[in-house]
Length: 89
Image (cartoon, rainbow, N blue to C red; front, side, top):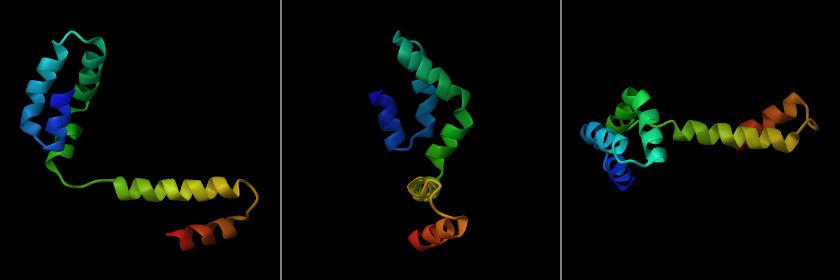
């Protein structure tokens, strides 16, 4: 896991294949399952390591909107909810 953390933090897509091989042969069932799951989405994982784009800001905004919606919880009309979302943005 330390090797995986290092290659993610240092953004090293070239080290990914070697990590897959070592993780699948390590003998730890949880790590093997984790590696196989990541391997199925290999293309997206390599793209995440190569590209600087992130959907983090969008996810943060969605989280904020959901929080506002939960706070209203049926007590507010759509227009009031709309205004709260627009003012929070």
